[in-house]
Length: 231
Image (cartoon, rainbow, N blue to C red):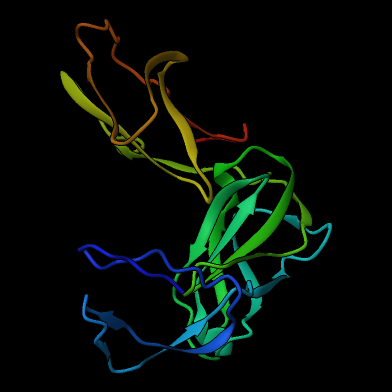
């Protein structure tokens, strides 16, 4: 399949015409015409891509939150044992990867749809085998529709507590997808807008001129799809 006349003895080999079990050996020749062959090495030449089919979600499903993407994979050589990795793509972008393929194991990976804008996505699975061949599934079209608002609460100060001087105003917010920001208000006036935790601001009640009596504290959280919730 190849030869070279000078070190390093690493000739380019053309295995394109070969398929399946192949026995390789090297043969060294000197100027006097003497030849010596190496011990044989058994390899498997594989040019066939694995097959892959998305099994969940199904065509035209509406999804939200964390979605488990699953696929059925197979390979002509050694079956699923020869599959090294499966990628899931949404509109051409890799959104989840399963590198835990074992004999008989289901292929699955989580997709955090809340991190993506609402809309229609074309999903495909791409399976890689140990030889570097890549197989792609037929597309499955789904709609991401996240209408669940974030969960938000005010951690400090406690409702009904008496405060004076410098006070820590803190909110806790979570979302099934991806939070965009949290805003904190005192009597309707914004005192903080933060895109990442901690959602905390120090409030000087004296400097702000807060009179004795009741004052309203609000926290509002937004996710990347525009859902919001208020505490």
